[in-house]
Structure formats: C-alpha cells, structure tokens
Image 1 (spheres, rainbow, N blue to C red):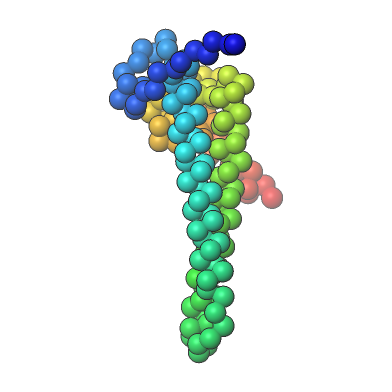
Image 2 (tube, helix red, strand yellow):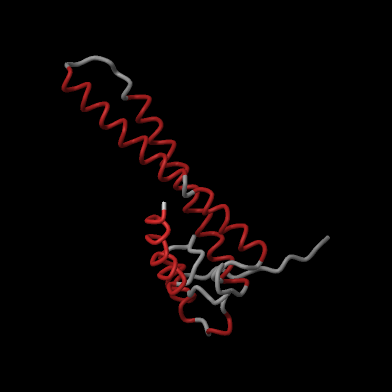
Length: 145
C-alpha cells in the first residue's frame, strides 16, 4: 500500500496570496492542472456542439438566399472548429509541462510567467516580455517571405 500525499485544493484568491517563493508548488500545479483539464473538456464539448450544429444544418431546402446564408454559417462554424481544434495541442502541451516540472516558466527565458498571466491564459508558454519580443519579430519574418 502506498501513501499518497493529499494536496489541498486552493482557489484563485489563495493562489494569488501565496508567497513568491511558493511559485509552482504542488498546490499551484494542482490548481492549474485542474483548470487546464476543465477548459480542455469544455473546448472538446464546444467542438462537439459545433459539429452537431453542422450536421443539423445540412438541409438543402430553401431559396438561393437561404442556401447562401446557410453556406456562410457553415463556413463560420468550420472556421470556429478549426481555431478551437488548434488550441487542443496547447492544452496538451501545458499539461505535459506540469508533469515534467516546467509549467509556469517561460520556454525562452526560463523566468516565471507569473500567476496573473497564467490565470488569464493557462496555456501561456512565454512571459509577457518574451511574448512581446516574439510578436515584434513576427512581422519581420512575414515580410521576408
């Protein structure tokens, strides 16, 4: 029989009130693991709902205007599914970073990303400074093509 350590469940207020030296301790990692898993499940449920909506809208009846409107709605739904499906690997990567002990630290600088940023975007891989630098470089690469 193995003894498992019980990690106390914390809320956002408790998380934010913790000392900086406790950054990414077991309770914080557990908090973000639960949040990421919940958001990922919600994303999958939403994608399933969009797919169901697409199946329902395969009605070929109506005049040309109705058909055109339905086609535009379908394009919107497909774009939404595509956009949300591209988020799933980011959730998987964040959950892997929790498992390997690198979650909460910038992938470029190894500096803490910060709890406020992770609360707003738990899949964040970069600190704000590193993200700003990345976004400033992106247009340069795009123009070079």
